[in-house]
Image 1: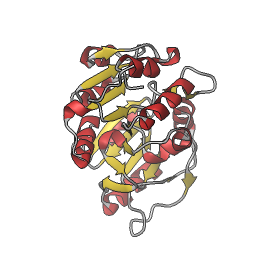
Image 2 (image 1 turned 45 degrees about the vertical axis):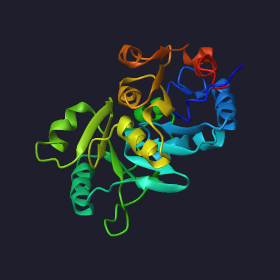
Image 3 (image 1 turned 180 degrees about the vertical axis):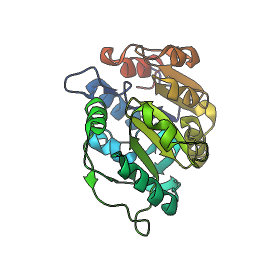
Image 4 (image 1 turned 30 degrees about the horizontal axis):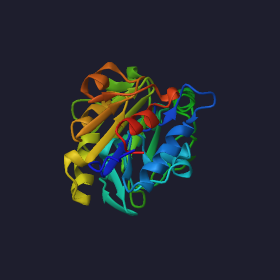
Amino acid sequence: MKKNNKIKIAFFDIDWTLYDHGKNPKAFTKSSIKAIEKLRKNGIKVVLCTARAFASMLDIHTLEHLSVDGIISHNGGFIYIDNKKIRSSSLDGDFLEKFIKKTDSLGISVEIFTDFGAFSTLEPNEYVDRYHKFWDEKYSIVKKFDKNVDQCFSALVYAPEQYDGILFDKDFPYAHVRFFETAVDVTYEPFYKGDGIKIVLDYFGFKKEDAIAFGDSKDDVSMFKEVGTSVAMGNAEQCAKDAATYITYKIHHHGVKHALKHFKLI
């Protein structure tokens, strides 16, 4: 079979694209892992592009299953390519110190993410348990935040929607996105996967037409806009399917492998 020589780099979402939450236990799909190995052997760079924090990716043993050329995490807010950090921002320590005093008084745990690790401000409660059960992540260590030592890239606030008005009023200085019933992500500014892809393409000197991306959700639409070829999983949200140039099979029907073969990349 004649190989596709146009594509030079492939971006992959993780959850419901490579990592199957429908399995018991949840796991990376073996066919996708093998397909990505073949993809890299064919000289195509592979970059993971996820909303997860870097520490969260390690919780599900991502890098034990996949060999990649780079990682875009936090929806594009943190980028690690060729063993070096090329994008990262920090939240102000004085603000976090005051914010954590407030969350502590309400019994709300906050998970603090540094570039490569994480810790929590309080012991786990029902809100934390609900989140970790769904996302299959490990509990981080509990320790006191020290503004003079801990550089915080982002924070995860474990609280239901009823607390939003108390915690995130009109004067709240940072971007905050509720993505789960008991979790709100706080970052320096709004991040989008598409912005992360543009930075990576520029880093490698690639054009939009040199890239392909795989995804399944609303978060992946911005990713699809920055590549020449976009693939929505068969299990994807309709908005992702509408934005994609190709719709493949569902994750448990070897969708990634099928699409890579369809485009003659493996």
